[in-house]
Image 1: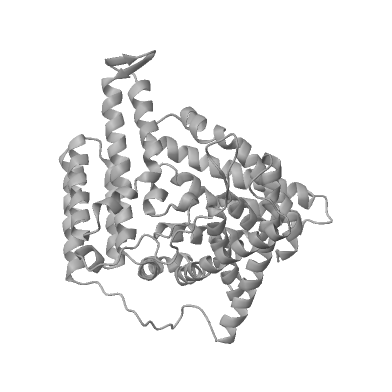
Image 2: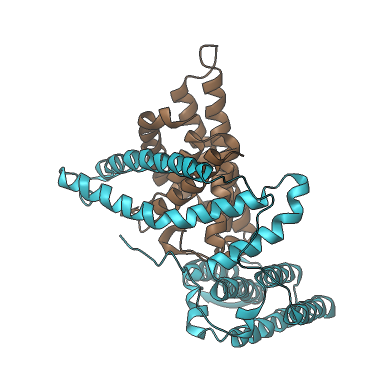
Length: 264
Length: 182
């Protein structure tokens, strides 16, 4: 089984400008870029946002290779979308391959759609590349806090995320153990027809869920035994602070994005 | 939400992540059978509606903050915002709907209502397949700027056989796990 590094995820430690920004600033600014990408239509606007994203990549000092790697999962969809636009959109004929007509309008729309997708992925993966999961969770809890008034459990969500983060490696190990135990009893996961293979998943799923629920209930008992009583009145070891850097970045990026949307 | 619900939700989010990595290669398709939606469906079958929705929200948030919890070890906000993000966002209402359908059958036990087995089948098909694919296709069409018909052809039809198999596996596992639901 593939086992990607779960603890750190995509995070690349560093001390660049982007690393030093508060997680809240980074999350909100990447959302601002996403909103801007969906509200512009001119290629000049795309180019302006593209420059912004490239500047951010440079400021993050994350190897460009790592940023591009984030695009790998969408290569297929990117190509498919481009082809669909190129050959299916009506318009002025550009060239013909077999029975497919490529159009000038299709080429333009295909290129802008591809640019939008690439910028979308690059802008958002920069956040996860420069923020450690723990800091991200803290930032998210702080960002969601105002929504408590409408009943959104900000602290609970952050705590449940921490539990998930803590237990993913444990559960992974457990799954591995269960698979080996079933193989020792003669289970075969790699051969046979479709039905046989699908059926082979059941002896993994059942023990995995039984043990996961047992762990969850034990954890609840352990937490309550240590007087866990939710987020109210909790104090923190790591405090998040918004600084001058955050103010400059927020004002600068929002002004630039507004210009990109309004100018063209 | 009490502590017991919170730990169950957190750990079910973890289980969904683990299932996303369990890939059974299929002989006839380049797309392997991944367990991600099995996690969605079993959350719906084994947790209360609010908890089921919360567990998938937590799962997606873990992925959003860069942990490789999505199928194929993918992660990041980009995947959620990208063309296939709709399917992932569909996990939240999917698990909710699945849990609501099966929960109503459990409460109505004894009265004239669906038998738990039919409710489980209905729950996984409606919650795990219809709701998830609906959101997935709408978002795919929107991001890729293609028609809903084309989005259906590339984003749903090739996966229907796999979805049917996953539903059967899920219900079979549920039959042995149903005592876990409170």
